[in-house]
Length: 239
Image (cartoon, rainbow, N blue to C red; front, side):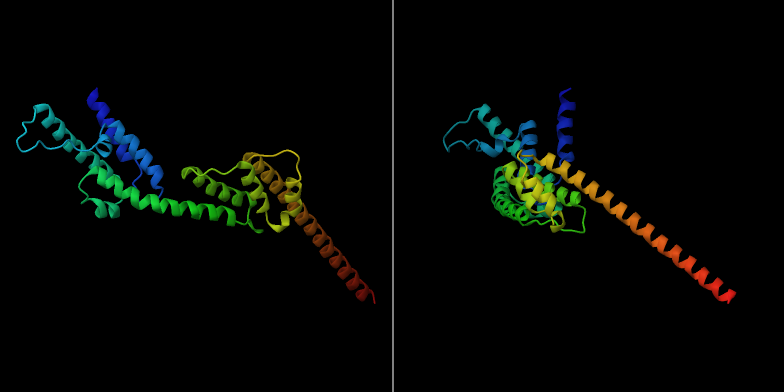
């Protein structure tokens, strides 16, 4: 039973998405959980047991402890490397210990993660919805940006988010935007999406009716032209 459990644990590493340099914090959290599960994460936080002094006689227990640490360090380092892309594996496979590998990844990608946070914040506030595209499609793009806020543990008040999105509405939605901004009750992000969906459906319905009316008018005009043409021909024949 224990063998099956260890086998299942090992398969979890194979299912883990390979790290290619993106979303480091999320990948690191998953990696931490798996390394703890297979009981080798301790080598990252606990130093290697020291070698005995020159004239010091070491107990068997101490020797075994150090050998076990060395073995687990190699397993831990191997697990980390094996869930990296080929490019990153080639760059880091010579790092000697799991702790050194873990620290190098943190130094590199935590800095890049901070840059990513600034980029995501700017991307949300600079986003402008435009006419000519589905407003729900654009709303979902904004929500996708906000999902990355959660991934990076960025907190933004929902009232500010909703107000900002309303301000991003394109010019043709001016009246709808004003009606939302003058509501007495605050609405959350999901409710805003519902309002968008209803408004977009109404606009599609009105556009369809307008096109049908325009087509009907055109058909009537063509019919009148045909009748006038026949009448004119008959009159000419009679003459």
